[in-house]
Amino acid sequence: MPAASEPAAQVPALPVTWRPLGPRIVGAVLGVGLLVVFAAAWLSFDQETQDSFTGLQIFTVLAVAGLGFACLNALMRSRVVATPEALVVVNGYRRRVLAWEQVVAVRLPPGAPWVTLDLADGTTCSAMGIQGSDGSRSAEAAKQLRALVNRPRD
Image (cartoon, rainbow, N blue to C red; front, side):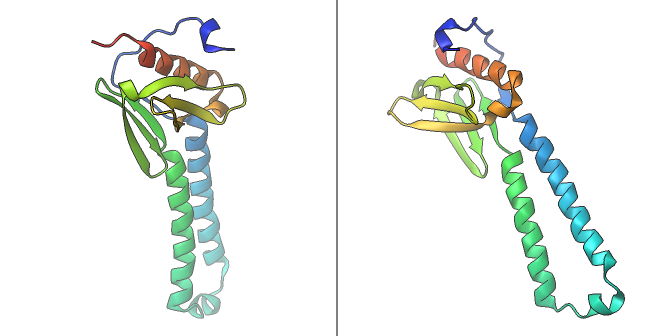
């Protein structure tokens, strides 16, 4: 449904933060699952097998686990924060602060993975904090963000 035919969304009070629900649930479940698998594998070894591991091997296993947790954390920390001064977009470990004047349009077409912000310089910025997989929750968040972008400035 094009933006022009949508019912007007109410402008939310600032500051407001949008976070994706699906990736946070999946990240938490996978994080706990990863921890359980590593712990179960270690505990299933007999003492002789555990003693045969070298420090480098243990470090490698812990590094792989740490890398997995870092990737899950990057997915879980994505968010969009609207403040009176600016729009803050956090995608993984990258944080981008956009002045309200920089954001021209907010797009979430059907089937899109997340919101895309059209910027005044002709570029776009993905906003993974509002994910299309969240269904009506993401559609409402996109409407609210669009209302904030289109509101009159003082």
